Amino acid sequence: MTNTILADPATLASRVTAALLAAGASPDSAAATTDALMHASRTGIDSHGVRLAAHYAAMLRQGRLNGTPTLTIRRTAPATAMLDADDGLGHYACDRAMALALDLTAETGIGAVGIVRSSHCGAAGAYALKAAEAGMVGIVTSNSDANVTLFGGSLPFHGTNPIAMAAPVAGQPPWLLDIATSSIPFNRVRLYRALDRPLPPGVAADARGHETTSAHAAHMLLPLGGAEYGFKGAALAGLVTILSAVLTGATPDPDMIPMTDTDDRTTARNVGQFCLAIDPARFVGRAAYDRAMTDYLRQLRAVPPADTDHPVMAPGDREWATARRRAAEGIPIDPDTRRFLGL
Figure 1: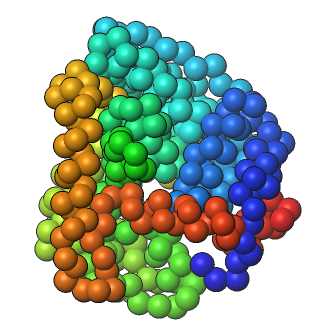
Figure 2 (figure 1 turned 180 degrees about the vertical axis):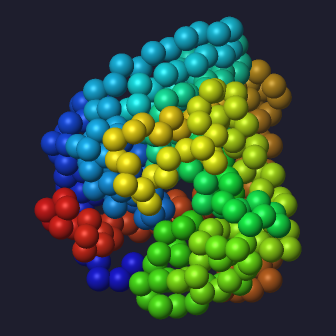
């Protein structure tokens, strides 16, 4: 990012919490949201970090988000449950849903919780990570409003629909995957418009569904895999929609109110999420799992790189390196976010 300042993480977290409380969020909602936003900013996922605090505050004030939701849990079987988020902040719902999934996992070895009437939850990896920190494998998905076309399609259909998974590693930071199923995030299109730069090939399409490298002409994103292999990303986006919306009763992607490009700031969006926790001890056993994960990652990182500028890394390696650097140097904050938080 350009024109940034470096902010102390503790000060930044305090300002984010204060801004959310001032906008009407309950203490529990504000705390969970701050934790998720700080996870993203610490690990370099700036598009889903503290910069979103201003958007959430606006939605709280304008009525789309319920600042004081009453979360309702319905246990549906020994290992499954549903959580009604009451149109509150999605971070709060996902935090509580993963905590519930972990409780179920302690009883049955696996726990799955669907979330309905939720909202944007930020970086899904923040909640999968909670499972790994508890010694479990965690998987989290969320659907979102349509801005990604289908493979060969001419209209937006799926959202960017993230998939996150975290797995514990003995004596090391967790293995952490957190990806969108689109080629790039739409925020990158907006950035390239501001910079008047062309997009890379194979990431966006114009209003007719034709691939374009013009950020100004880009109307929708292409699914992961681009114009040639986008059927893979489109299928993964569908997987997320099925888990997050079809299974839960949330609004499917094509029917969802847009998060930002809309004049409707009062109607709740009914986003859906899905949280799954798995206890490795109930499968291969804890000791065998720890040995296998350690050996797997040792072999992975020992693969010689084809290009010395790009070392071989496991999912999460880049994020943990960024987190260590930002803990020492501070977190970069863009001018708009700096003004909003009074930094």
